[in-house]
Image (cartoon, one colour):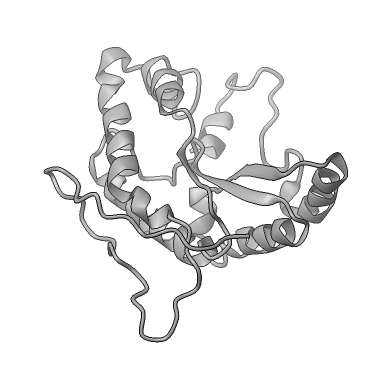
Length: 200
């Protein structure tokens, strides 16, 4: 979403893009070493939903989390930081279901080492700046018609945050999921949550 938005003329003041930025993807080991030198106890980072949807997309986050744990830095992933795959739209209720499926994949891969998650980064800001006023991606100027965007983000958070409860790898004979992904109900959520176990 942001790739498409920043490619438009005049969207970024100096015409720059986020194609490389600080190059954390390639320099994450150096970055973790800097965190260690600074005595930082936890590192909040954002998971790119479009990257996760690409082949091998979770591999980077697997390596990053391992590096953080080895350095004694607590990993704190943010699951949605305004980076939506092309073709999805928070105005559509089904995006909440798609978010649940994505969260399940990330949690299944990283949940044995992650004990604290952030589901959505500032949903009000994303709704207002991205959909109501159009100054952030996706650049829509819907004004009050943007309110369903906030509603669907909150539904996604409430109904599927159980995927993010910390847990250890499953033992023999134990279930691997208590709340399988699937279409979101239109009524109230069940409230089922995984029990906490361990994390790095």
